Length: 276
Image 1 (cartoon, rainbow, N blue to C red):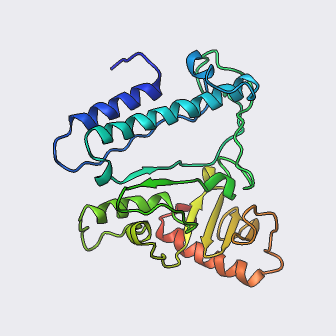
Image 2: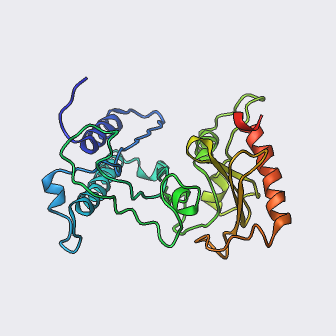
């Protein structure tokens, strides 16, 4: 199928059509917008909306992409409102990684007269960017709305994208098979009642499996190289050092080794082939 138009508009329009075509049956809608992602090249009407204080072609197209995405999300929320579904719909807005400072005209994408220069992704005060296992690469904001069910507020409880499947399943009343093990946990109690989550390890693998991280409580370990014989360990206290400025691996070797052993166990359960 060949459709003309900007992908942000096409995705929003299709999502709105789908919502408006639904009857009374419950539904699940996943809308994976490509924005904001390189190479950024926005229509002139969206670039014109960017404040003049934002200078540089890439920066202005980047900001325009955010404005464009925000408008598209608003269209989806408006569709729910028109269908009188806002109060009975759990709405989640999240991202898969932190911002990037990569070159906009990356050679892996076809030439399309996109502006030259690096993306202005800024994750400060967090360290790192997309592709890193530092907080700037993996920690993203998540916005959740469910009027009448979730009270306004915020939580700093560490969660992962893997938690949404068991959460949606539980809210929908789905009972998995006895031998099915979710990778994540049900966030229903945290979202609706503010109930604390039990401490559990959050495991991530970097690009090409060259590095891994484990968050457990207030501690975070980053391992470079194979888990059987790591080349480097970096240990941080995320509660007091969210910017990961102070590596405690040498001063807290027992804690580093404890998290390393937990990471090995989690990696095996995760079917990480390089740990087998």
